[in-house]
Image (cartoon, rainbow, N blue to C red; front, side, top):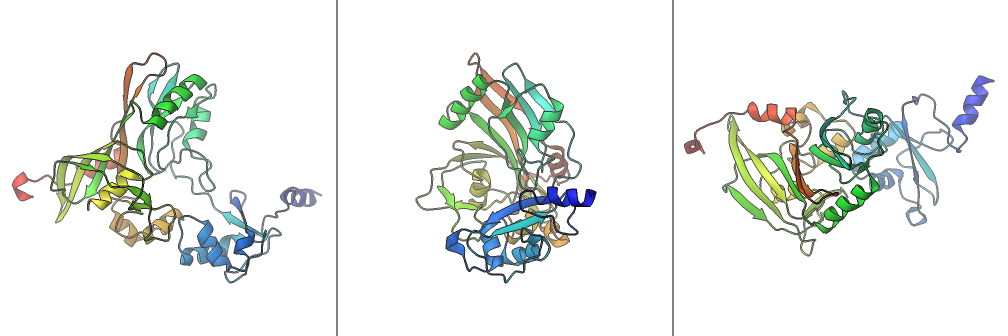
Length: 345
């Protein structure tokens, strides 16, 4: 009887958990649009997953792709209109994710935390337990917090939330209008910029030289984008040069700092998408980085930190600056590099 009831529960949405798939696996349903009918499954999956190659899509199919009734699918399967492809994948929640977050500022209207690296802001298909929103639900159960802005999963630093609807609306208007909002970041990059200060005004849009839809690039006719940079330090490890760069955003485009630094010839250390080889990005997305990948990246996440955020306070309009010290992993990396006299540049 218990086995029969469990089977009924598993199939109440018409989807059966395949044999051997654990209870912690995350289910994702991909419905085939009519215009893609007849496409091979590996090509279909590559187009649906934003951070994978065809080789990786084939590997995912071999262990994760099933029909709703639990039967496995093959990579050469031809998908049909309105067919449902079920992916059962292990969650990628960060190991050692904190149970609580460090609060760097709070009052009756807003709250700011120091977001750790490799912790998603919101639950996603593969990151659903160790997220900022879930952690804060447990940490502050009596609060009804809303996110005012976001940071990429790998980016650490100041993250601002509202404690009231009025504060949420007031500060989001500042962000949307780019009015009185000052966002400053720190980045550790490969190479020594030949300048101490530089402004980059290159337009940004979806990259045209990649298979990854999430990637941005410098595009003629793209959205106007502006970032100011200041070199705060230069160091070495052997013959390899590094710089600590302060970054000030004048616009808020996706991946703006990362793309602008790459365009200037100084990619961020640890950047899988804009660093030494974008193929690393797909392996990283599936938690499949090799020892060679990690050696090339030098850090398991991109070295970008949201240092400070300045806004007009939503209640009384006073200028408020909230800061978060450089994350420990980046501080340790920077301290481990060698300082040399400026004549050695």
